[in-house]
Structures are given as structure tokens and as C-alpha cells.
Amino acid sequence: MGQLTFYSLFLFSLLVSQIFKISQSFPDFCHPYDKKILLNIKYKLGNPPSLASWDPNTDCANWKDVQCGNIEGHVTSISIIDALDVHSPIPPYFDRLYWLTNLNFINVPNLSGPIPSYFGTLTNLTAFIVSGTKLTGSIPRFLNRLTKLNQLDLSSNKLTGPIPNFLGQIKSLSYLVLSSNGLTGPVLITLTQLLNLSYLQLKIKQIIRPDTRVSKKT
Image (cartoon, rainbow, N blue to C red; front, side, top):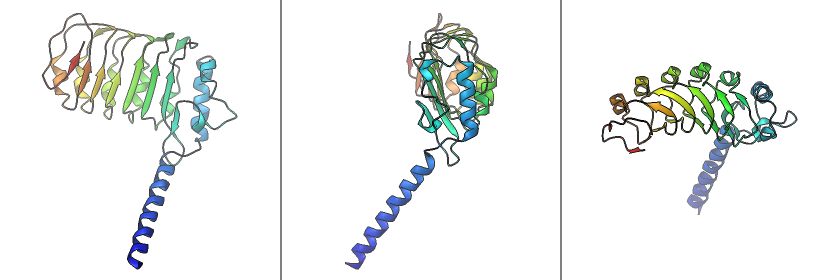
């Protein structure tokens, strides 16, 4: 009986410790600095109704598609999705959210201009999605600085030019989607250097089949 009680207490303490860890990972508060940055971003985007949850009178940990993921309450994930009322380039300030691991712009059809070069300073990013926008220009070279990136989706934009060699330097990539742009040229052999790549989706004018280690959907 004593052994059973001890075992039960052990399991209970283990459960409490796990709950504590989860609460530490996803706090119910947002760091004031990060909240100020997000409100600046909202202002630069024209205070669109699609970001109505970004309310200065509420905690940004409770805002839609915003996640605070460390003990200090710093923002680690932002998704701007189905924001049909945004009519602007990507504004500054995202580079001041130093703890970001996920940054997504999905179905923001009037988001325009190039992908800002300052995104190259967000070296903690593991997922970067820009899909369904009017962003133009070439695939930016700064991406090779994002050495932790394992998901990159730049599909359904207005990007042009070739698929750059430097994508082969992002060794952590496991998911790469570049389809539905204006990209031209061959599928580079350098993509076969991405040994962790399990999914590749392209749609360009000229295709050379890459190494069989990469599954390709066109």
C-alpha cells in the first residue's frame, strides 16, 4: 500500500511539473515591448479590421494568431491570414521581435512590394510563409542567414527570376514550396544538398528533375 501511494504521488508530481512547463512555454501574458511593436505594425498596415483583435486594451497573448512562447511573454509566432483589407507593403518593426520562430502572411492579396531585407535578422525563424500576396522581386538572398529554417513557403506571389543557388545552403529545410510565381530556369542541382528536404513543390518554365531524395510536385 505504501509503495502504491508513493508511486501515485510520483505520477502526480510528474504531471504537475509537466503542466508547469507548459504554462511556462505558453504564458497568458505578452511582453509590453512586443505589444508596442505589434501595435506599430498594425498602424503601418492601416489599422485594418482584420486585425481587430490587436486591441491596445487587451493582452497580445490573447490576440488572434499571435502566440507568446517563452517565460518572459515574448511573441514567438505571428500569422496574418485572410487579411483582404490590407493594402500596403510589409511594414518595418518585425525585426524587433527577436524571439520570432514563425512568421506567416497567408492570403493577403493586396500585400505588395518586395520581401524586406531586414527579415534576414530573424535568425530564430523555423517557419516562414508568404503565400497569396502581390509581393514582387526575386527570392531574397538573406534567406541563407536563416539557418534554423525548416519550412519555407513563397507560393502564389509575384516573385520573378531564377531559383537561387543559396537555397541549397539552408541545410535545415525539410519543406520548400515556390510554386505559382513567375520563376524561370532549371531546378538547381544544389537543391540536392538539402538532405533533410522531404517535400518540394515548384512550377517554373523549365524543369530538370532533381535528385530522387527529393519528392517533387509540380
